[in-house]
Image 1 (cartoon, rainbow, N blue to C red):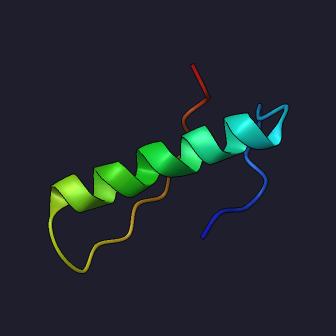
Image 2: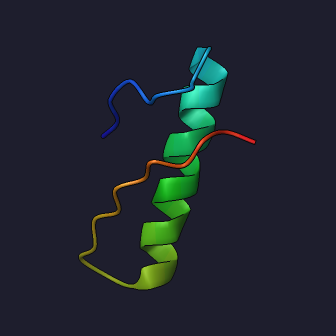
Length: 41
């Protein structure tokens, strides 16, 4: 799930931020949620 991220100027940037959070959660183990305030790089 994602919401409008601050600093995301396009859909591609928003999806990149969401993708980074997804992989952060997957690397952290099962049954995990990650909240990201990271800016796209």
